[in-house]
Image (cartoon, rainbow, N blue to C red; front, side):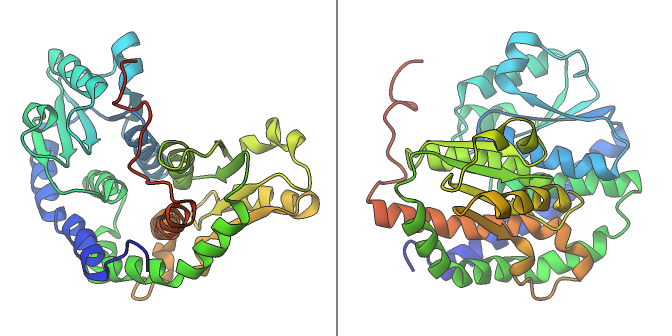
Length: 331
């Protein structure tokens, strides 16, 4: 398999899971101290991951939870952020300018910033109040925070049972999902490598991932034109530009918004001959109870898109690390 070292991938997922006791320790102390509200703040891919965590929490929790785009916050502010706000951020490089400025502004009102900063000794690594340094697994890390907060609220009673299964099986399940979809990924890429525009649909916690996949992966890393749209919004504009040949991929998960995505699939089945359906229901998750598949869905689909990215890079010959403008020119 291209760019796939099974032991390294297993270890990366395991490293993310092993952060949980440390996350629990810090959040337990903050909960006792008192949290008035929770803000997931990001920009680009981290903003997308924030959307995922927000959707996950709002279904279960009565806590005040909101998402803030760092650039918007710098321009507009947000009066809800105060000295009892927990602000959660993530950064791969630790040097994103909007995030640095946003953390400085957050600190002006004495809010607490919890950061997953992948690179040590960077500005954000030094600035945040609580820092975890373990590369990758951004969605897993955000969801571990969200779930611990909901556990304290008393609305996630299955927390211990669910995470006992995560600890035991998550890393292996993700590796097996990647391995099982390698051939599919190459076939998918061969069908779509020459698309002039590709549309991605998702719903629920998958929508943030859909937004990120279109923008951060296909556009930024592969230089392929895309559009992402929430499957519910598909019926309020986009459906009118669909014909037989329009390239569309629908991500279908097993959470409460599954039917929203399936409605789009049913429409496309009638009109379009060039759509793909990537449904988490078809991806095994050995060791997990059926009732937890909704929590796992977006992770399982991420394993599939990992292989699509690898296949697209190999077939196209376009290095995913190549940039023309991002951090190359002033903007």
